[in-house]
Image (cartoon, rainbow, N blue to C red; front, side, top):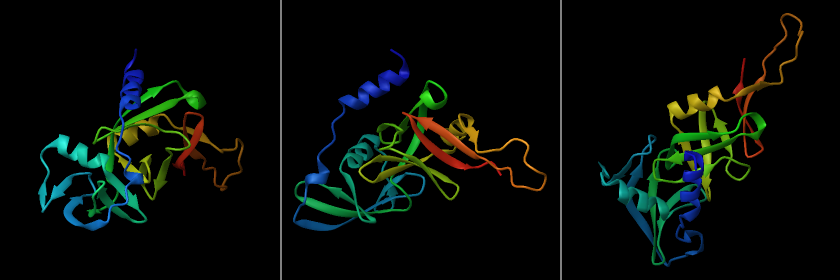
Length: 184
């Protein structure tokens, strides 16, 4: 079994709490903040224990534009600068349109990019849908590896001089096509 299959198997064995079903009566706020680099803070100090961060990530939920830590008894609003997760690694299986891209996040999520978990650019930043409206920003090394897998589409041969010849950089995973930007 290769690393891709090992990670996929681990992900399929993982079960997350059903936070989408919980509607607790007690609602409040907690001084937890996730900065733009995916670092979690409590009362201004970084949370040093990664297992605790990973646990919090399993009970994280996004409602409209706000993020909450949700349990059956309470729902606590937290502050998130950009998105809550970072995609820190990527495994690739196959090539071209038959390619599969598997991403690992800083909190232990494993996600195969597909139509339900799209890759998208917002400005110059690449994002991956992880689950239930929660996204990961691709770290720079992961994004550079992803760009290396891109193919250029939409460039016409023999275009007249002075005409924009730019194409689109695209990558495929699970049969889904993701545009990552213009080549111009």
